[in-house]
Each structure stands twice: as structure tokens, then as C-alpha cells.
Amino acid sequence: MKGSIILTLATILVVLFLTTVAWAETRYVTDQLVLTLRQGPSGNSKILKTLPTDTSLEVLGSSGEYLQVRTAEGEEGYVIERYLTTATPKAKIIAKLEEENQSLAQKLGKAEEILAKQEQVLKTRNEAEDTKAREKAALEAEVEALRQEKAEVLTAVGIKWFMAGAGVFFVGLLCGRASRPKRRGGLYS
Image (cartoon, rainbow, N blue to C red; front, side, top):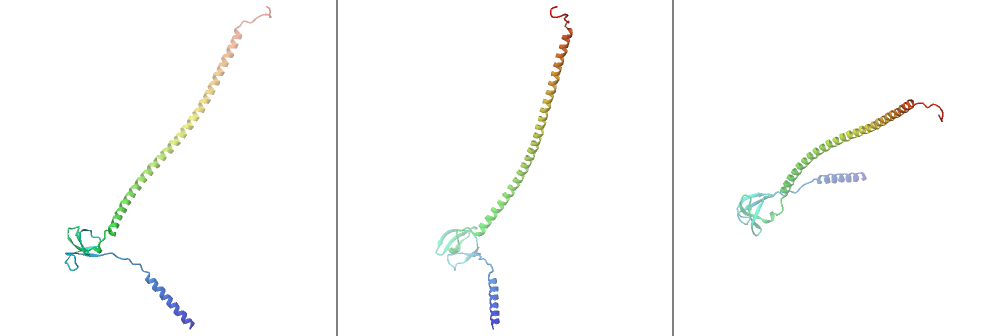
């Protein structure tokens, strides 16, 4: 008995669960409407034309629950007022947004192309600046080496001239001593 009650409850729970899953289906409300353009302001008047959703109409006047309107093609007639709105239709808003989206996508593509070109120009300039910096460092090192060489040459030249001057002095001193007559005698002679 107890087992059959549990089995019955389990069966009921499974059935409820499965029906809940079936009811979880997503649905959408449609707003498609076909409106009749009539010859006069009544439901018995002759139908001139059917107007689909999002048809643009110019309001010319009012007669009870009907509005006198003109279509974009120039046809005049009457429609029930409650089916018209001043709000822009969603389909037109969507179309406009899609156009804007395409336009923005094109602008984005162009901007990305410009960015890629500018990045390439920047890369080229950076490489050129790096090359110039390396060349400048090499030239500065060469200048420093030349300064050191100049200092060494000046020191060597200075030493040579000093030695040459000292040699001339000593040769002159020796020549002067040798060419002078020798004194004979002592202090009082």
C-alpha cells in the first residue's frame, strides 16, 4: 500500500514536471495589421484599398471614430482612428538603426585602416629614430676617440719640442763653452 502511494506520487510529480517544461515555450506577440481604407466614415462604406502595417497616412480631418486620410499615392478615404499612431513604426526604426549600424561599421573600417597606416608610419619613424640614435652614439664615440688621440698627439708633439729645445740649449751651452778661450792662470793673472 505504502509503495503504491509513493509510486503514484512519483508519477504525478513526473507528469507535472514534464508539463511545466512543455509550457516554458517562448512566444512573441505580432503587431501585423491590415487596415481598410473606406470610401466613407462607416463600416458599411465601400473598401477602396487595404493598408498594411507601417503605411504612412496624412490626416485630413475627423468624423467620429474615423479619420479622413490621404495615402502617399494620393488616394483619399477613411480609416478607424484607434488603429493609427503618431509613433514611428518599429520596422522603420529598425531599418534606420540598421542603416546607421552599416554606416558606423564602414566608418569603423576606415578608421581602422587609417589607424593601421598611422601605426606603420609611427613604426617606420621609430625605426628611423633608433637608427639615428645608434648613428649618433657611434659618432659621439668616434669624436671622443679622436679627442683622446688629439690629446695624445699634442702630448707627444709637446715632448718632442721640449726635447728639441733642450737639445738646442745643451748644444748651445757646449758650443759656447768650447768656443770661449780658456783662461790661464789663477785668480789674479
